[in-house]
Image (spheres, rainbow, N blue to C red):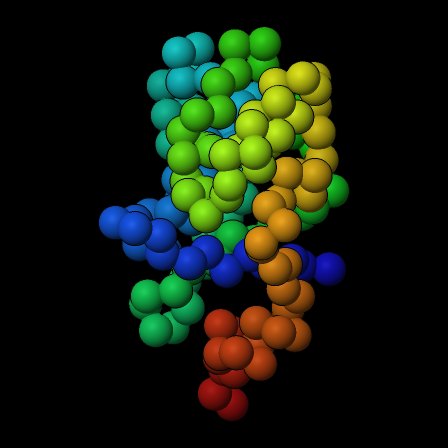
Length: 132
């Protein structure tokens, strides 16, 4: 079953920039930028979908997806994409990621985040019906 996280704009970051940055930083946990090959320079974990309004963006996620953690991983950039988190929540997120060799994505979804299903997305105009 498809799952989606609608990414809201934060500060100077648009929904699109923030969504693309989040999925890119999730990839960088597994393969840090410093050791990436050329073909990995724009790799991501999850796809980003665009609402027909062109303004809203969402991540198509799998909360059971296992993210391996590189011993060289840093997550400052990922954590910075969640300014709504308290300092304690940021610390907890960083500690959790860096103290595990791997983790399911769902374990790091902030408590302030709502995961939507396909039916919700259809009902809210994300996937307009095809004309017959």
